[in-house]
Length: 129
Image 1: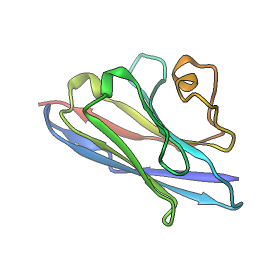
Image 2: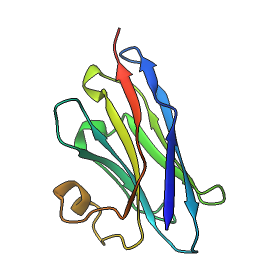
Image 3: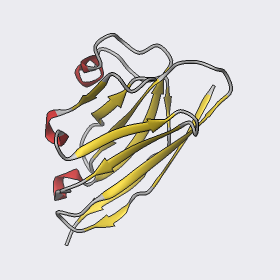
């Protein structure tokens, strides 16, 4: 069982930066992938990025490449999403997620072939002037 709690959302101006955090409460010792998804108002949830347990496998959706950076600190059971050069279209509720059995290709999350096992409740990011 994994419980995930996001923090760090808020209002930021276009071009600004924000860092989201996700703390995981893990009852079993297991290597798990973690990722971020987002859901904009009136739209379906979409994949943003994912990172493997050791950090060696990272995947971003094209729209955030070069602007967002995912990282994790396993000693703290925490994953981060550093967001820079934010745009109004980045406005969404951002969800942290964990997968105990990640696929070989993290692109499967974006394609909807693979899904996460556990989800946080989300944190709202609003990009507006």
